Amino acid sequence: MSILCGLPLVECVYCLACARWAWKRCLHTAGHDSENWGFATAEEFEPIPRLCRYILAVYEDDLRHPLWAPPGGYGISPDLLLLKKTYEDTRGRAPPYVLYLDHEHEDIVLAIRGLNLAKESDYAVLLDNKLGKKKYDGGYVHNGLLKAAGWVLDAECEVLRELVAKHPNYTLTFVGHSLGAGVAAMLTMVVVQNRDRLGNIDRKRVRCYAIAPARCMSLNLAVRYADVINSVVLQLTALYLDQDDFLPRTATPLEDIFKSLFCLPCLLCLRCMRDTCIPEEKMLKDPRRLYAPGRLYHIVERKPFRMGRFPPVVRTAVPVDGRFEHIVLSCNATSDHAIIWIEKEAQRALDLMLEKDETIEAPAKQKMERQETLTRHNDEYKAALQRAKTLDVPHAYTPPSEYGTFNDEGEENSTRSQGESSNKSSVDESWDALIERHFDKDEHGHTVLKKE
Image (cartoon, rainbow, N blue to C red; front, side, top):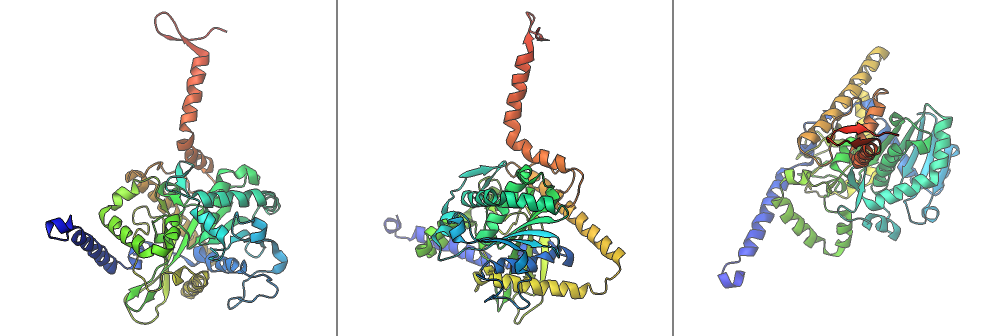
C-alpha cells in the first residue's frame, strides 16, 4: 500500500505512535504512580526487610555456615528452621522454600525463593498460563502459579495445621520474591478460601508479603484480598532516569515475554502500539487482565531527576485505577527486581522511619498511632472496593462491613460476600428446586403448598 500511494503511510503511522508512546514515557517517572498515596509507618513496614532476609536464606545450602549472608546475618536461628525443600523435593512443581518458626515475632513463616534462570521447571510454571485460562473465586488467576501454590499447600498442610493449633497467638505468613511472590499470593488466597484445612484459622491471622511480584490475579481479586496480601515494589532514582522494578508493571503475559526472549524488540514495538491505542478505562473492564496483588508498598526516592542519592520513602495504598499501568524507561529495571537491592533499600527506609519516630516513646501515643494506621487501612480498603464498583470492574462487589486483617467482627460477613459472586447460580438453582418440591399451582394458577 505504501509503494502504490507513493507515501509510507503505514511507516508514518507506526513512527508517530511510537513517538507518542516514548514522549509519554519520558515525562512519566516511577514516583508519579504513588505520588498521591499515604506514607507507610514504621510499625506496618517493619516486617518487610526482615522477611526479605528470610527469602535470601532460602538460597543458602547450610545456614550454619552461610556464604552470602547480608550485614547482620539473616536473623534466622537454624534450630528453628523446621523444614527446607529443594528442587529435588518439589520435583519442579514449585520453587524451593523454607518453613521457619519465629518465636521472637510470634510468626510462622513460609518463605519461597524467586525465579531460577537455570531451571526449566521454573519456566514451566511461568509459561503454564494463557489469558483467561484459569478462573478462581469470581476472578482470573495465573494457572501455573495457582497449581504451584496448591502443591505447596497439599505438601505442608499437616505441618501448618499442627503449628497453627500449637501456637494460637502466632500469625501465619507467606512470603516470596518474583516467581515465589506469585506462588505466595496464590497460596494465601487458597488458604483463606480453605481455612478448614488449617483448623479453621482466623482470616486475620493469615497474611502475605509478595516482594516484586508478577501480575497474578485479576483486578477484583487484587483489591478484594488487599486485607491479607501486601505487594512491595522498589523504585530508585538514578542520574536523569527513573528506575523501577519491571515485573509488576509488565502487563504483557509472562509466557509471551519468555517466549519472545530472542525477539524482545519486536514484542516491545507491538506493546508500544497497543499501549498507545488502548485507553485505561478499557483495560480496567477486561476481567482477564492480571495485576499485582493486594495492598501496594512503593519504595521511592524523594527527588527524581536529580544527581546523587536521596533517602527513600515508602508510600502505600490500595489503588484501583493507575495500578502500575505504565512501563517506566529505566537504566536498571532488572536490578530493581533483585531481592538483594530490595532488602537493602527497605532496611534503609525503615531505619529512617525509626529515626524519625525516636521521640515517640509514650506507649499511649504508640497505641494511638497504631489505631490510626488500622483505621486508615480500613478506610482505604473500603474505598478501593467502592472505587472498583464505581469503575464497573468486572465481578467487583460491595465493601464488607469490616476489614478482615484488623477486625474480629464482621469476618463472616466478609467471607460470605466473597463467595456470593461465585455461588450465586448454585443458590438460585437450589431455591428453585426447593419451591418446586414443596409448592404447586391450583386450578386458578395460585401457588399452594403441596399436600403430603
